[in-house]
Image 1 (cartoon, rainbow, N blue to C red):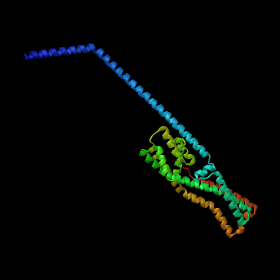
Image 2 (image 1 turned 45 degrees about the vertical axis):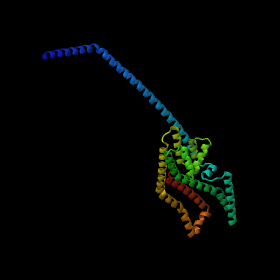
Image 3 (image 1 turned 120 degrees about the horizontal axis):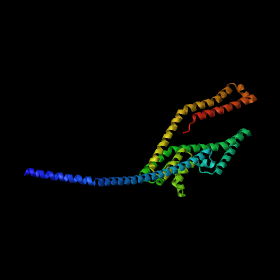
Image 4 (image 1 turned 30 degrees about the horizontal axis):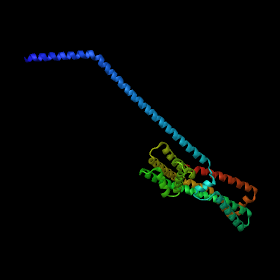
Length: 336
């Protein structure tokens, strides 16, 4: 009985397996066709997704190219402005007076120069009675001394700006990281910074109050402070305004670059100090020797001043001295 049941179950199992195999054989083409159709639909969907990604990537690339072109145009404009300013090696007297930190007009400066020259020339004439010497003193005191003073004050103010500017940038970086906007950071430097950076940032605020944007107002800084560091700051602000990005990181990098430039300049000055001392000694040696020879043997030296051939020798020597000093100056001066 038990053996019969096993035979029945085996027969039923074989019949079911045969039916399944027969059904699969009959329906195989349809199943394979449906599977291929699903594969094609999946591939079409993937292709549509890939096409969408390609279009999005193309749009992002076009936007990046457009932004890059805008930045290039902005940098080209700033570079042209810098070249134009560099081409004017001698800025107008009005700009030099402002860059020196003085509050006076060109008319006032010319009046002071004329009065100073007349007073110095009159004192020189009363002292020795020689009109030629008095005329020379008048020219030097009226035309040379005031301009030298303006140049000295201007150079000192530029050095003070370079010393304080990186510290001001660090303050701006910390204020921006704390959540303050750029305008408030500039106002903070304008109110709490050190001179002369505080005065220049006040002028940036005043330019914004007159309707200029932050990049344009910062771009004017280079015209008042003709330093590469000021131009770098204007370029960073312009790039941030055009392309966005992390402003605190950009200003922090700029501050670090400015400090590295300062260290490099100090290193170059230290390495070239020996050459500068040698140039000073070589340049002063002929005058020292001539003075010593005149003190020991006046008649030996006076022939250079009384004879026409001596005049020619002095003129030729002076020309060669000037050429030598200029050559040494170009050899020991480095631009960074």
